[in-house]
Image (cartoon, rainbow, N blue to C red):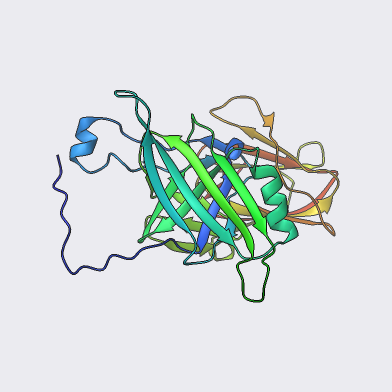
Length: 284
């Protein structure tokens, strides 16, 4: 087993960051793994996810602000001997009663979400592939000037690992957060692939195809009509996938996460221009 040592006089901050990320669990296509064996424990890898969350095409994580000094993460064990599991918990505090946070409360209270929360320089996951997360968002208007106001969000989820560490990427609407290096890259700073000549990419007059060579990017589409997104994974026939992309004033912009080798086909009633910000991309 590893030695567990604390250096006296070392910096040991409490609390969580005000940057919390969340995503509906059904947006996740594939989970990273945790090694549950003794060798992993000896090497200090027993409580870490290996790899990144792979998301459904057209899906991304969302940001939730939490007032510093009012949020925390913790865990407790429950169950009978030889059958114990940990319950990972978080308390978040949003300081206002807005339409956005009330809509989140409406769906999260009976939904199943995954949360990524930063503490002491590391990102931790509350949410599990096999267990449902319970989210209880309670609102309060406050009663006097300067009193507490807003929404308190209590989260609980059973797990086999206490607050597992996450070192993968978080795909957001405007870029990618690398949780290992704690660095953010805006999509606009990525390589840009402009697809405007459809002489080779077009099918039936209204589609464009490409193959992913990296993992995350953003797509900018100009046109009109409903957007259809189809993906071929591991050489399987193209299959239409749910997405949140739609035209507004003739332009649709959305992040997406495909994976190396995925073949993607986008189509619309009228498709005039596609610009893709991506680390690596092949048109076909």
